[in-house]
Every structure is written in structure tokens, then in C-alpha cells.
Length: 344
Image (cartoon, rainbow, N blue to C red; front, side):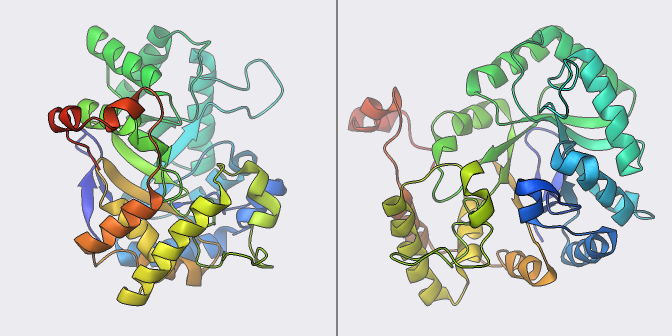
């Protein structure tokens, strides 16, 4: 397993990490992802540690805290062998204090997560969504207190707009407070919006990407094909309404390109899709999911080899999208392109 610096921090993370949304899964979304109890979770973590994967990602909103509780039980006795990333900020109840990242909400969320995880510190705390109602100075001061207390080691964000992340970084510099070092983002061969603004920002500001849903919400498992129904066992039957949108023709064009590379390499479609992401700028770790041991071992096979330049170019071409305004006109100007070489 290879390891990379998480953004501009001193924290080294494996290029693959395990998402634990499948732990203790309940409800229409998380229940469809997986329902691993502590025994099953412990076995998955055993496999990860054997492979060198020591970063495990969770959130307080995952199955109403059940994911954190199961993860805490599964790592009992080996906390010093693992890195824990958790997230907070999304609504966990109906009350006015049950969402966002105000001082009271953030402190309470961290205390709750520490209890559920059965630990006294969190390696990476990420804000699960942008909260425009909390002043940035209040947020950064609270995070600084949590870091100084030792309860949080590093901080990051998730699903943030570029302007809000840049505003936070500038405010942290202005007040001499810890900067965000990670951004957990959606990025896949069928979802490349990250590249337009967030990737250049990450390069400039030293923010490492932790990629969620690298298989496009289960669409790049190798099971979806043109003119064929969604396979019976696919979680898309229950979760498609929650998924990032993608046009069918674009999806199938990417799948065709993946199939061609699979025929050349003998690798699976998911392994190729994940390996492509590992070649992209700013990516520190790709978060893989697994409902069982077989899925986990298959996904772990995405490392230890690399796509060729020609294979990457073929996948790039098949998955290319027209960049959104204001990038569109610049992308068509050769002179501008020479002054601003693409990151991808």
C-alpha cells in the first residue's frame, strides 16, 4: 500500500481508505449500503490492516451514529494502529441545535463522536456540509480549541463550494489558526466536476482530496450495460434517488471505455475506475466501500499496478465533459491554455 501526505499536513494516509457507511446500516439509504455488525466490521478491518489500509471514514449522521459505534467496537484494543476520520454538520434531529457547525453544536458533536468511537481523539474531523449561518471566525476559533485540547488532530471539510473553502483558508491565515488540510469530495469517471474549481484550489491551498463514491454511486461496478435492466442485487434500486446525476449515454460511453481497458489489463471495471482516480492531482486517498469480504478484496486490487498513459488518455476522452462557465471559453483558447496548463 502506498501512502501520501494529506494535503499540506504531516499526516500520511493510505491511497485507499475504508468508508464505514455500511457499518450498522439502517434506513432506506444506509440500510441498502450494508448492515455490518461489530463482528463483521472487525473482519473487514482485519483485511484492511493486513493490506496496509489504516484510515477509516465515518460520520455522526451515518445510521444515527451506529456507524461510529460499530467502528469503535471493531477497533477496540488497536486504536494506535488506525486513523479515524469522522464528519459532522448535517442534521441529526429536528431541533435548532441539531445541525450546522456552531460552537455548541461542534463541541457537542465531537464529544458525542468520541464516546461512540470509544476514543479520546479524532485524527481528522471534517465539516460534512457548508453552514452559511455560522460566522467563519466562530467556526475557526472552535476548531482551534478542539485541536489545542488534543481531541482533534487535523481538520477538513466535505462537499464545500470553492469560495467558502478559500474564505476559510484566508481567515485561518489572517488569525493564525489551523487551516483545513482535506476536502472529502465526490469524484469519479462519471463525475468530474471537481476538476473545474475545487482541484485548482486544492493545488494552490494544499488541500488533499479524500474521494467518496469513486464508482459513481455503484454505477461503475461493471454490472450496468446498455439496454439492460439494473441487476437484481444492485443497491441502485433503493438509492438511485440519492445519487449524483449522470446522463445514460455518458455513463455507457465511460463503461465501454472501461470494458476495453479491462480486456487489455485483465483487471475489473471497479479496479480500473479507482486506479484512474489515483493518477489524478490532489487525490490523497480514495474511499472504498464494501458490503462483504469479497467486495473489499476486489477493491483492494485497485493498487499495486498502474494504468498506461494510453489507457488513461482513452478514459479521459470517454469521460470528458464540457467545463462549466466561466471555464468554457478559456478551454477553447489555445493561447490561454499555454499560459494555464491543465491539471488533468
